[in-house]
Length: 140
Length: 134
Image (cartoon, rainbow over all chains, first blue to last red; front, side, top):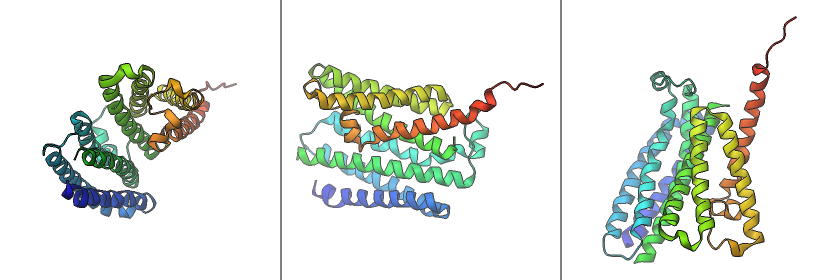
C-alpha cells in the first residue's frame, strides 16, 4: 500500500493534472494538440500501472468491498477510450457511417474535441483515483 | 449546434451516466430496502443521463431537450426537497444538494445543454416554416 499511496497515486494525479492543463491549452491554442497526444499516451500508461498496483493491493489480503473497488477500476478503463472521441469525427471515419447526423469535423475541431475530452476525462479519472485511494487506505 | 459543443455535451453526459449507473447499480443491488426513494431516483437519473447522451449522439434533439428539462427539474426538486425534508432522504442521490456531490455539474450541465438546444431550435424554426409565395 505504501508504494501505491506514495508513488503511484501522486504520479497518477500529476499526469492527470498535465492532461487537464494540456486540454485547456489545446482548447485555446490548437497547435498544442501534438503535445496533448503525448500526454494522452502517458495517461494510458499511468492508468494501467495504477490498476496493476491497485490489484496487487486489493488481492494482497486487505478488507475492502470487492464490488465497489473493482467497479472503480473498471470505470478507469472505460474512461480511457473517451479521450480519442475526436477521431470519430474525422471525414474518413464519418464516411463509413450512413448516419446523416454523424458530425464531420475539421482538423481544428478534432483538436478541440480532444481537448474537451481530455479535460472531462482528467477530472473523472482524478475522482476515481481519489476514491480508489480512500477505499484501499481504509482497508489496510 | 457547434459540433465541438455537441460532442462535449455527449461526453459530459456519458461520463455522468457512467457514474450514476455505477452508483445506482451498487445502491439498488446491495441496499435498496434501506432507502428505496433515493436509490430508485439514482437509477432514474442514470437512465435520464444515458438517454440524453444517446439522443445527442443520434441527433434526436427533441428527446435531448425533454431529457435535459427533466434533469434540471429533477435537480431543482430533489435539491430543494432534500433541504426541506431531510428525513425523507436518508441517503444521497446524484441530484441531492443540487448535485454538490458531483461538483454541481448535474445543476450546471442541463442549463448549458438547454441553452444550446433551445438556441439551435430557434435557429432551425424559420427554415422549417412553409414559405408563402405570392
